[in-house]
Structure formats: C-alpha cells, structure tokens
Image (cartoon, rainbow, N blue to C red; front, side, top):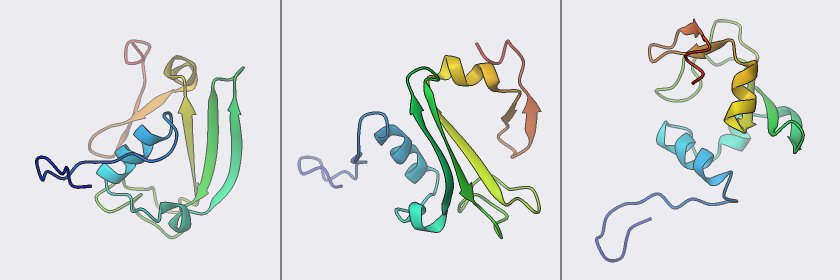
Length: 113
C-alpha cells in the first residue's frame, strides 16, 4: 500500500492481531499472496488455551526450497509442520533451530532465553 502523505510503500496487515504479523513476515521473506493455494494444508490442530499454541502440517512435496530465496528443504521432504503460539510454551518443545545458512543446530537452554 502506498502512504498517501509520503508516497512510500508500506505493509498493510490483514487479518486478526495475532495473524497479521505472521502474514507480513511471510510476505517479507518471499511467500506469495497465494500461499494457501500453493501449500495444501493436510492437518490443523486448532489453538488451545491450555496448550497456548496451534499447529499446521502442509504438503511441500516436490519442493527443494520453502519459497523463493527461502530455507532449503532436505531431499524427499513431503510435509512441513508449523507451530505458532506463546513462545515460552513452544520453546519448551524445541530441540533445534534453523541457522542463517539453512542448516539446523541443536538448541540449548541458553538459546531459549
């Protein structure tokens, strides 16, 4: 969206307040607006107030990168799981993280801080 006062291009989030930052971040890293059609969702575990998170599983069969300029996918990857929610709850389950070079590295308790 173009700012009428400055003429500058700006991101205009759509959706609810918890979804909008994710959508903006996805667009900034290269995902298209048609992502829902490009990555068929095969499973969704809805948000739960007791778990403080939700989970989706999408079909990424036949892809070697997640998106243009994005994370490389290991050969033969068929499914991608994405979890969103309260960071302190999600981090409890994390054992590795994605490094800038696309590799995965073990996640220590110090990394979680």
